[in-house]
Length: 437
Ligand code: ASP
Ligand code: MG
Image 1 (tube, rainbow, N blue to C red):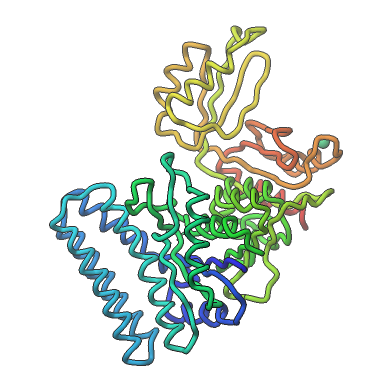
Image 2 (cartoon, rainbow, N blue to C red):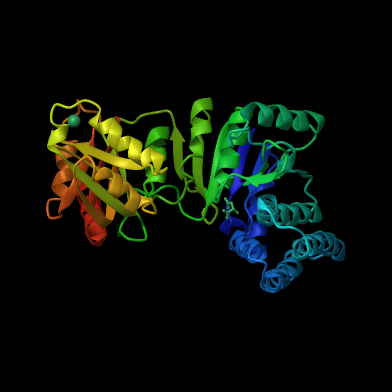
């Protein structure tokens, strides 16, 4: 069994829904995870926001606009009256339901329930379309098996038991469709796996069922070796190790949800990134293999703040770093990069909302300096310490760029640089020229 996930743009118009349907209806046994049509979740966030602020009029305006858009989509998607009516009835009910929040008490679950409707609609549309063209398909509601535990983490045992149960009771299908992103929490209320969480859904299903492969279909040809929006001549990377992929996803390569591949990695299920616009292209395969002797890719993450604490008290002292880290922990701010010297430590954070109190507390331990608008450049590949030459190659590429921090040796496949955001484009292009072209 394979798990295929199609993101918002892949189902972003009636034509794209038809293209996806043609791609998935090939008789191979599979579960297909769908996102909401692109833009829909953002509109739902807006609607929930207005309800939260008790501005029902504005919420209802957005709902009406969205409804008009969907009625147009439905007319374009279906060619028979019967299918058109079936989908219209379903979608009209959803929009009536959305309007009903005007009069109800609004809480966190109301918000999550509103956000869930995008996937509920898109899966219904595609399922009805497939049935209209004569394809046998079963729609499995994600809310029947996707669940969080008391810590808000996916409850893998529950997911496995319930999804397997549903599949065993309905064995006569090749094609199952389900919603990405949405789930229930520990109390059974509607919840979600955070924005962009449909990738996570696919990986959770794939690992629960020990699938043959998880395929993430987007509209770019796999993970590229550099950011194609910024750099010329990028090419898709054919294979990545799970850890390399996680590192790239976290540090900017927008194609994959950063935490989503962890379950696949633990279950040893390969993940393949594929392109809906070019379905026969090989894409990127992510698995446990570690290709040696190569630098694979570069990614960048903006909006980074660097903080330096210099203190003679650090000299020969124990517990200094712990005290520094505890301050960040107390303000729920996670640290990305760390470099140390005998008298100082520099760290980088990407969430600077608690910067002021953090800096105030740090001042107790030394002199504090802050650099804003920085950017992490992350290079992944075979960067084991006993290799020679790669660190030099990477630093040489950046020889004309002021570097604030370098972090190497934290793992076997990464070296990171902190530079000014203004230098990002030059740095990325220089790295591509040196490493890949
Ligand atoms: N529809 C959700 C979002 O826009 C989940 C997803 O597309 O992955 O965040
Ligand atoms: Mg080395």
